[in-house]
Image 1 (cartoon, chains in turn cyan, red):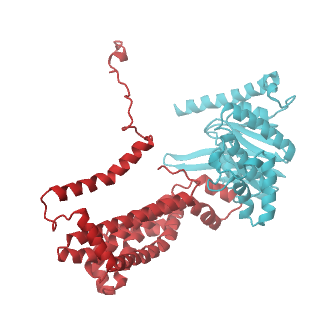
Image 2: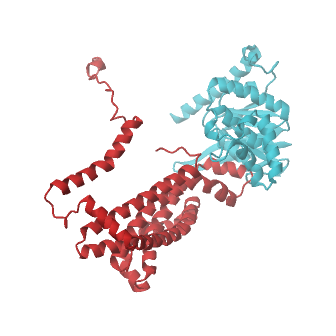
Image 3: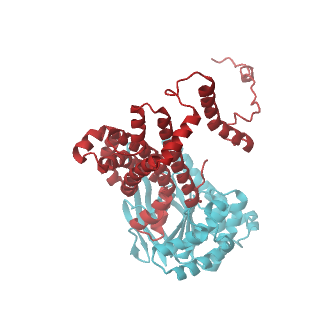
Length: 258
Length: 281
């Protein structure tokens, strides 16, 4: 599996003229990678994710998954949104099965598949709960189970932990790394949280803002992936480098605005 | 301009939130108080009515006592006239309302979901909504005569446009994320419409129907004031002609109780069918 983004540009027409949101984006995501795109607000990272998901069309350039052009949304790309988009009238089991149901999978098969992924995310005991009865972290795990149930080629994540408190966030980080190791799923995640990106991914695209461009591509090599690594100097070097990249762009944007 | 201002605290008048039970905003009141107030709400007017008619020197042709109204109720009940009237009115409301709901719910969902359908129908419906249904009565009599058809059509007109527009509005509360999530999960538009939008707006639909049923119930009474041989509206208008004020009261109370029962039924339906939604009341 690989995801190829070639010379991607995205403009929006506003009443003040053309707004360039994404400019010359080139990315390659290979099977089994955990990629983060890090950027401040205005870096067009959500717009980028929407193009990959097929919810939006690029102005120019192309996106291919396994060589096939992306023309619209489809279950080969699973997505987890920042605001848990669980269906509030369905319980966790029904939510997890829903994608399979939409694709015509027989009831018995989809039930087993959903149960398996609910146990993978540790929600087997909450299958009958309604989303409103779950905590933020549990909702997000349910959303991940729902996305994984269709066995997508790539899991897209739109600032999935942005709304969680720091403790839940850390446990979700551990959970993601564990999930990634066990399922070998390819993950493409966008975030503004630099530490989160360094801790989770094996490659990072640092996005500059206004217009969104790939500023730098950094391969992350950490001695290990436990929370103690965050005190390691290598971790700090990556973090500082990224912070500097993002900060520089923030200042440029301010200068342009002024 | 450059002089440094005095401390802002000099200008602040100290204020404290006084403790209260009765005047709590957006909070529940204790259950016993709630019960007492609910009983007062119905009981006080009844008591006042009884006091005025018992101790005041009032012509019963003008305001009959509760006892006289009960008596009239018994009389109309025993001759089965009241039952016949009630059934006639309920039947008209039932047919008119169910027809209107059967058309307005799907059309409202379509209008809410598709900007194209909305552009096509909203201007017309918005205009029709402001034409009071009773104003159609002369036309309806002209077109449909004086049987059941004009009465049912009147209810249909009075409910259909309002209900379509109210159902349309509930669809606005379906988040775009939820629909996009459905596409990403492999759903098509039809599935998004039937399996996501519809269940999501079902509580809103029930609520819209609850409100518009009240309108339908008013319209049936209006339609019976014009030309009818039976019905609760007819009962009131006949009683008025013969100055049987007690029967007018019977008619009004029966109309009110039936309307309230409808309302409670819909509230119950909402609670049972949509446990997932957090009701505000």
